Length: 307
Image 1 (cartoon, rainbow, N blue to C red):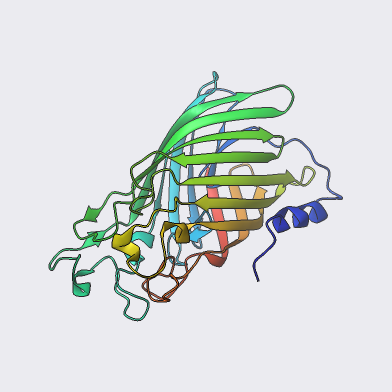
Image 2: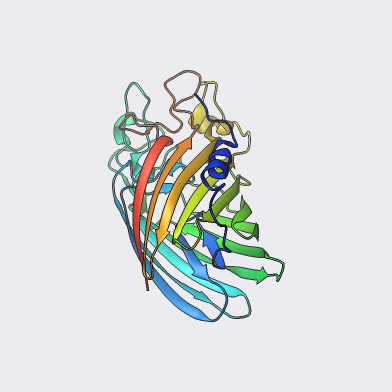
């Protein structure tokens, strides 16, 4: 059964009704909640994390397997910031270049035949992000954050067929009040995360991270919507009855984090109502070569060391 869009926030309200809601630390969030950047004075910080799986916008980027992650951030007292962040991934080459009935990994798709060619392969095992922006905080508790992020996937792309390179650039704007935020991200690159004819895809993120008194615990809730333009992309969908809108979905999250002086522990449940395949049942959307829908129900435990 599909969750109600505001279920995470209804649960959050019930869980925190008796909690003292002290102001949250001033932070700028990137890639949803992968890491945070101090924004009150000039700083250079770093982080390294170990996750039971890497979940981004409700999608497992590692097919349910662990991820090692880390990054560096610089923020200026004037509000400007720059940063970089990395993680191992497998989702791109895990995609199914064949069909649901005859799966073939995009890593070695030659056996599928045209449009794939013999003797060539694809490899993408790393996500490397670069971002920068400007954040303005107001005395009333409101803040505004504007920036640009480049999702870069170094690798070998010699046999992509109906796919495209996954490198993606987005511009974003976020408005926050205390522990709640609303963020809008818009893809400005030619393609979005490897989908052909996908320029202009966007993502809306409504999130909350409510501190429970001074315990160091926060309860998280999130609902997001990833939307792709309704382009036919016939090279991929053919006569399956699908189009790029089949890549659109809504995702939800409920979790908690415990913040220490240098270590943060997070545990979260996520759900994305991703489609496994087109109406023909054989042309896959979010079902990878292992038969897994990379959205749906996920649980991730993350340990982060900040320095």
